Image (cartoon, rainbow, N blue to C red; front, top):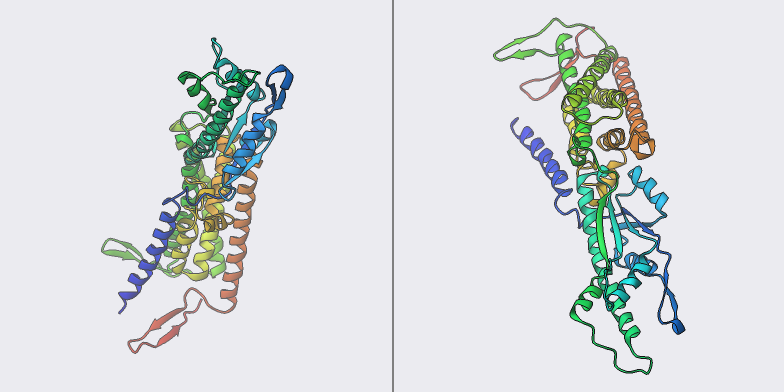
Length: 435
């Protein structure tokens, strides 16, 4: 019956894997929530109407109010900001896009209304939809979808209002019949707004449209995870705790009697040295491939910190629960970590429980730190502060967990030479070897 256990474990493991990886990509638009977009209304308004009945209008205010009402508040966090604050939040990755209504919007809209019935050249008033490509390629697509859908509806409403105003202005003072608008005039008035989509701080070439930060963060995480598993196995083999197999042969070195605590310290030391070496390799490979890096040394240092934090925690988990720690580490760092990283699909376009996972999952913190270094000039406000402090916190948790567990095992006499032998009768016998 021993074959049932691996089937059951792998089935549950793959069910979790399938659920997590498919749930965050199946329907991002349906899962959209709290997606931050700035709304900048700079319109100063204008005076319209005949000289004896002039009135002040501000189409920018009307559009802002219509967008706040038309865009679902549970899906999009539409933030009314000044232009300076909006640019600051865009620079720090706090908002994913911005809808900007210029200061002369009402004036240009009035000129369009008059110019539509008077010969001459006119230009449509412009509303700018700015994307923030440094927050990710998928984020840009969502911003464009949300913005263009909302502005299309606004364009239609403003067109109807402008057409009505032009008809009123053309009505004779004596109350006679207004002249019929030409087809070209009706078309111009029905679609009065020109929506311009442009990026805010375009990414340079060699950034994979904003994906290099995600994949670099993934490399750091895998280095720590795979490093911890490799170091755990190879150090145990060198100490004679487990045999090493080479095809049909295996080598079992004489047992070296080190306490669990000292063994873990040895593995941690190897992990730190490995993190320095591997982080250096990643930086050199990135440079060789032409990946833009404005702060190479900062990326190297953060790589060392991230790999060490993941590796130390992974080794502590392996020291605490043994071989089962392999599955626990995979679940913690990979299965739960990748879909909640926000590196491909933003957290605000995934089911709500991914936002809960992103609050502590290592992959999200590492991604924020790497993205801030690569795309946001190493800005602490753009996520580097959180990436650093969460890595330090994770490292501290791993150290405390490893020290407490291994010291506890050593004091209880649960040395690594101890074993549990299952006899043919099914009973378990504890066999202790002397250290």
